[in-house]
Image (cartoon, rainbow, N blue to C red; front, side):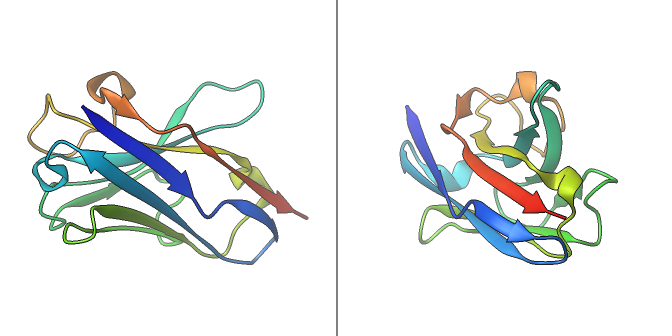
Length: 125
């Protein structure tokens, strides 16, 4: 079992920054690719970013490329999402996820089998 807990969400003005954290416990954290997804009201959950187990490989949705940075510290069992130049359309509940079924990063939420409870990010205009 892997337990994931997100933190760092909140209310920020457009153009501002936030850093989300995802603390993992349970099974060996540093073996698994991980990712961030988000879900806005009335919309389906969408991929934001993913990172390989080593942290060497990352992948971003086009909508956040150049503004968000995903990283992980395997020594602290924590993954991060640094969000800069936030826009109102970034408003959503952000979820972190881990996959024990893939060896590299994935944009497909169905390939992630452990999820956090989510943290709300609200960007005001």
